[in-house]
Image (cartoon, rainbow, N blue to C red):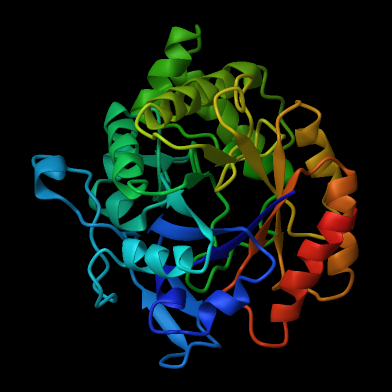
Length: 358
């Protein structure tokens, strides 16, 4: 049973009590390249919050690697320790823990805002600046280089957002909940950028017709007769992205993915070849009724880590850990060692124990 706990570098650095909170897990997935976040640090002795105001690389941004590139990462201004990932990894390894580089690829609001031409755009022309579209060669090259730089010295890699993000996004004062049906959200998550339109044309579709049909389908239950071609375009870009990224990583990779091929986001929907080239899949299983999602992923024959959280309702979490293992999970990826307050820290160990006994 693989047992992994998630953390940020700032959770570890400056807190001598952190390693004890990793009791019960064998590996810490430590953020090495991560999107912007306002993170609680309830047990840290020096602060209660960290405001990471932009997506950052928690490794050195080496000028010789990134020179001349539009898309390039920034180091975190809120961290006083250079190469904070490596320093935190040293602390964890001294306690006998393996360290995975937790790498987020296409979720970057700063880059999507500065360079909107590579951001996902919907059929109405609304851009999603938090989402870089992998149909662009420039995005794929950026992601592959980022993964290579972030994973240096890691025991393994936890690869998130290796595909397209869509409509849904937790944003500042988000006011979009329940505004669209699930079907409308699907069509609003179809990227309609120039590169994706080229992909449609290569599959025999007229982009003008596609856009008008999608707009109609968002507003009414209209049929979308070319759904397969749209999905194939997205999957082709996802497969190219994954291949280029994996070619630059030299350690085992667990890939965040969802068994539903239409899903966008941090765990993109599986393509027909997803999983064949990685060590394991990490499948989102935060709701306590998500064992069927794990079962669907496990049906592919790949090792599956169920991505669970101790930050939701406390009722039934240990039973949930047992159920996802019974559904086929071969590991737990537990969220989150640093965000959980003292009242929830015991749940980390309880869920790990329940998974091992299932």
